[in-house]
Image (cartoon, rainbow, N blue to C red):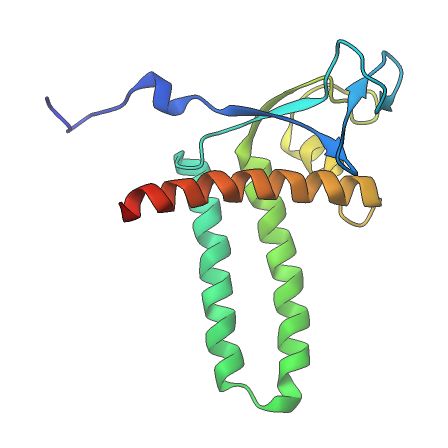
Length: 158
């Protein structure tokens, strides 16, 4: 087998995540998002954790975390709070970037009446400053991505 240009279509397949708030699945009722079950689940497809885009975005997140740990080790006590605040905001942006590249498409998700899955609409859907529900969806998506990434890391350890 020639591994020079090796790719298998199944390896590119993503997985669907049914969006939830407070542990309750979200649905579209034709007018609004609801927790009342309909035949239209609000869901997104996430690219595989080992896809080039997701892998690179996750790597940037991990590098920022490692760099921060080194900065804190060298910092004076009075500098740590400011370092942590700047770092937290940077990580929030990297987390958003990761989610944006991880989502490949969605179903029954509307942003201001628009059902197009665009980077701008994804950012609006996960806007952590807008509402608790959006923060919950954002963290659900990050957890799903991180879980798939951890499964890859576990498989590599075997």
